[in-house]
Image (cartoon, rainbow, N blue to C red; front, side, top):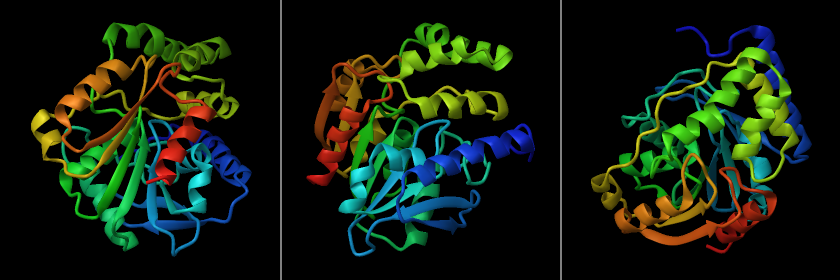
Length: 285
């Protein structure tokens, strides 16, 4: 199968930014190379090994260093494992998995088994939320609790709004590489300006084959089978996964829904203050 990076030069530029973000964290870390049936998975771990384990799962077109940067305080109380999701612009294998079957859930459970951890907390943003819910569907025996920030897989937004406000600016940037289009894309998704995201996604949009598969939603039957406590953070101004719609459906379908918080002034990607509230909720478990 052909790789997802379009050129070696483009791959080098993206991974250089990956390394830059990781080094800027200024933390002690170790990179673990985990073999799974879906491909080699890179996991960055930090924190004291005797602390309880937490796995962080980033969103689409992201990477583990971004997840570590989003929730930096967690390493004080947890042994943190930040996973590079497969088929994303990072250091894991370029194997594309289906969002419609149990692949993501099987993959994450293989990682948990390989890490030899139990009673693990999972925290994920956007696509990371879908992966967590898929993990619980497949097997929740080793999971203690989960935290979902603006997760995929519960509801979807208006497809026309998504097309005009997000997809078209992205495509125009891919065609022209004019900064105004990536700025427009990011202004729709990010609550506050993120300079690293601008640099990183500008490279990803041009040099990486992204997945434009429609995001499915979890069935009511599958949701009702989940026993693990779920804490949900929704964003009121989220074009992709609207917060009010998400909370309404989550309350209906998840019997294990423990807590819900609506960020009233948040777009899809939370700002620093909102991410600190998510951290605080996790640290207080």
